[in-house]
Image: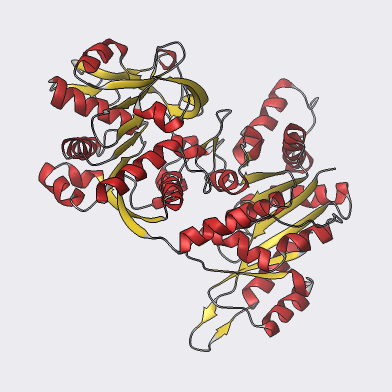
Length: 534
């Protein structure tokens, strides 16, 4: 029988509940248990696919084409498990499904209410994920902060669910903040006590407290939290700020977090195999060298918009015992080519990530041109590949008006065009080419050597593609199309094999990178940057 672990947060938002959930998943996996994570988000959007990166950060895409919260990226990276549409649930998707059932007459004229109809749908989403994956443990994170009005249906559904499955089959973990007051030199427990009190007023008594803190928690304060929050002393855990998120599982293991959870769920503890993870953390903390990699995009003021890209670069660095310093370059600052050169002069490699819209495009083209002309290792992702094709068409092939129809509907040289399957699509939500698709690599190419095989599968999120009418001319001009869809109709990877590393993909390789198993394209980029620096 699957055991359930619910994770809530209190006092403030952005406490790192997702990292705690992912870390506990890692610890349980290290003990040989099967684990899945689920994220419940209280916002009314059906999914984050139509939300601005400035508001929500990155949209993470799963193999089955779900556009999800960025926490699913952490879950996959920490637990090395591929998740899907069952693993991210929003209020919008819950209400949409209930309303669709009401419109069909499924409720036989009855009054549709938050309780029981919305809460029943939430519980059904928990069970659907259980049936899909059949895990030993299911970790469910509730987005937002306790006290938020919008999260109440989820909290009530959890209360009902815990009651229905019985004692010993579910535990609640509450993450709180212990603020430190420098003037008195104290960590204050009252906000956490109040947060637990609010949670209890909703009918949920947390069994475990994870306290985010900048300072070690004194024994007296742990005892006070245990007493006033009705939690066992060994179940009051501290999570201090750390240099790397990958240190968190080891810090939690030192406090026997998984052991406490297993005891409460009446499951025999097992010896954890964390040796590989310890080596990873050692490499992170003791790099032999440092390299600077630029990320040139238009959401650079919010690094969460590119979080999987950043983590993938770091993963590749860990494998080579180097620290990757990220230099954020706002592509709008690169519209002037001289300014672009000044910004790029101290970087060892550059990534141009995905995005939408015309803002900052000319700057991205200048970044790519500078990387190509100066043989700086370059990796383009999705829109980054499309920009690389436009830049090459303009400055090498000689098509000065080359553009994408996304930016200029009347372009005389549309080297990037709307995909055929997208031309009759209505609406924006969930309508792009989404999820995992296969790609055939050209033998002997840079991409083929990086992957070490001919057929690969990668995740996509796009509407536009390379216009096949221009592929021959671009190929004749030296651009190599080294990855194509199995039917030969979609360009997936381009490269310039004569340069140190100039590769771009229509897909998003960052979604499949793991901390102890970096993605081949990111590994190739960092390898080339290190070689060039030497």
